[in-house]
Length: 454
Ligand SMILES: Cc1cc2nc3c(=O)[nH]c(=O)nc-3n(C[C@H](O)[C@H](O)[C@H](O)COP(=O)(O)OP(=O)(O)OC[C@H]3O[C@@H](n4cnc5c(N)ncnc54)[C@H](O)[C@@H]3O)c2cc1C
Image (cartoon, rainbow, N blue to C red):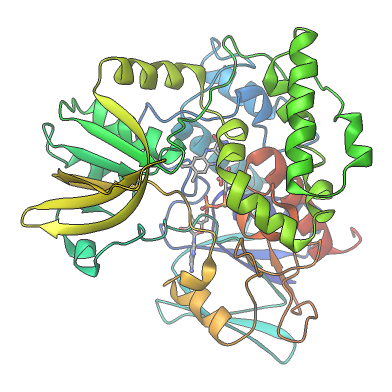
């Protein structure tokens, strides 16, 4: 049985590993356009300041071997412990080592194909995938593991900005960030973890110019506890049994859980952590109008408390802010346009009707991965959407799919032989981004494709 997997970040790589372990007659072709097999976008960064935002003890690639990553990391550096936040590039090496181990254990069953998939077509009981090189792959099943997409264009951006030397559209291009003049004034659009990464890259390269981040709420990401502690395993709040499924109701329950916890000496993070494993069930209990309300009104607050930075990263950002080298302003960007060699940003500070103006040497788009695939310019995504093979969900979080990740086609039925793994499954689960969720998802997807073990 031949299976094609497109995308070799964490999701595609682990699905390949589980597939060859599941059945001895499965052969996988893993297609990756970057030529880097294993790390994907998150763990390819060469910047040593870019740390995991999950403690090492919870980053095993395998659900049934919780210390797998920790043991691997400690064999090279015994000072690493369960609460360490290690370099993301080290984690990329780990995923590559997991892939290499599977290839050695199952020789000739995982082919690494450095190429870009451009088109996919289901015909005569098989998937046919065209690659940029001209090669065509035929397989019984197709796994889409296309992962994190580039940020959406900033609101109000003049089209001329996209070709401007001062504008950085891809915040994960570390070399591009390092090429920004050290004394340049820099606008960071967005104030989440992507902004944090960009600021650290500039700082390490000796940036001296002023850095201003703007986001609607102007809230910097929260940090993990220091020293890091393993999650307490607190039970979800009992009030959830009586929850009415509304976004506001959820907010009230979580606030009460934080307050009750605080009265008993517990950290607010425990309340947030307590609903992590049941988030998909909670999400499924919300009607679309409530999900939409959550996305409009609460999403940015949720992201801030849920996706936390390593404590040492939080300290660096706090130092930069205290030294007034970095400002985070609550404001809405109204427009961004070239002003000769510089860029002019117009923005409205939160709570004010007055538009302010700022001239900067560089602007970096830190809006984070765009979940609205209908805006994608990626050839494969375009072809799959335009030909109606797959569809985006109404809230534009990913693709419409059944609970197992089989995308739903135009007729509302699962697309034959296709499965999605990774962040594109956000529409069904909401929580489908980080390794603790993806390691479960990839194992299940492989089990589904392989069927009963032979
Ligand atoms: C900057 C960043 C940091 C993160 N840090 C953490 C963390 O510390 N801990 C954590 O648990 N999670 C973290 N995450 C979440 C992260 O999304 C997951 O951990 C995981 O890396 C997602 O892997 P993926 O394979 O689904 O996607 P990706 O890593 O995005 O991989 C998708 C791959 O598909 C390839 N691809 C796409 N289209 C094609 C095509 N047409 N043909 C061929 N190849 C293609 C891309 O080149 C890419 O390599 C982070 C995310 C980001 C963006």
